[in-house]
Length: 330
Image 1 (cartoon, rainbow, N blue to C red):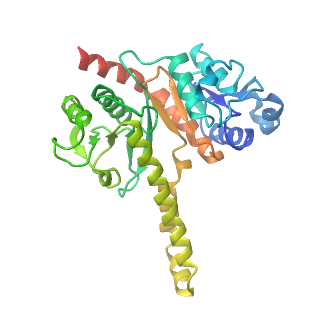
Image 2 (image 1 turned 180 degrees about the vertical axis):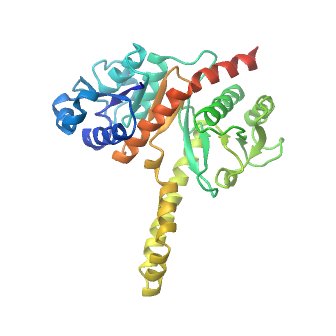
Image 3 (image 1 turned 90 degrees about the horizontal axis):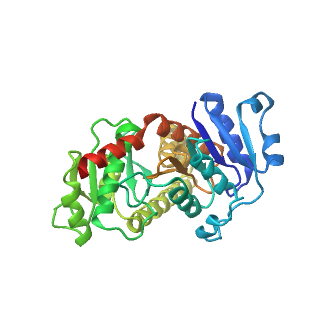
């Protein structure tokens, strides 16, 4: 049974959405949630019939969003430090946190450690596409602002393995984000990365920004600076379109009637762009599953983060990454 250490104090809205989301997941999947946080606040939120199916590790300290990520290394009694250490000690198989992402990433990298051969872990995220029930994995989206060609090559290996094992994409297609499809396009780093990633059978070459959303590719590789700008821009565009549609629908009775007829379509669209559907972003490259959830995560998002952690652990994707690296380097 998969054991998940959960930072129950890290989110923007306190213990409730985190505990509630984990309990929702527990109703559908068999796993062991290990809540790390204030026991006096966690315990009352757990229904009686589930109290013998969870564990609570009490602590009262939490790394706040406005604090430096490096502070977490000194705060050994904080919820995220303890949650990560449970994984390090072998008492948990995965860690999930909606708290300070920098603190989570730093602690996971330094306390749990990197997969042998990985220089830098990368944060992966999922982008909706125009193809039904299909997402594009993009990495890195914020862990590494500056990358060299070898870093991008390793991101490609990790993303490819994740798509194969966790998303069950048997013949994944890996693309390198650039300003044109030709091998000569891009900066010096991407040109060099193109040659390295070319060793992968799944590599289809350079891709452009629009290819992320049209289903052409399954994995897109970029540095954390570009990836984070891409992520925030996409979120902004989605919010703008939603606001525009709501405004236009209210303009006339005909628009309102049309919206009612399109209700199912709008519902599917919302599901595609809702971060809660994905639960969080896996930090690829560390020795154990680490899921970084949005600070504003609601119970639904936390539930899906639990499911994502379970799939990650059960897929043994880290072993797949290690073997691929060994093959490429050997």
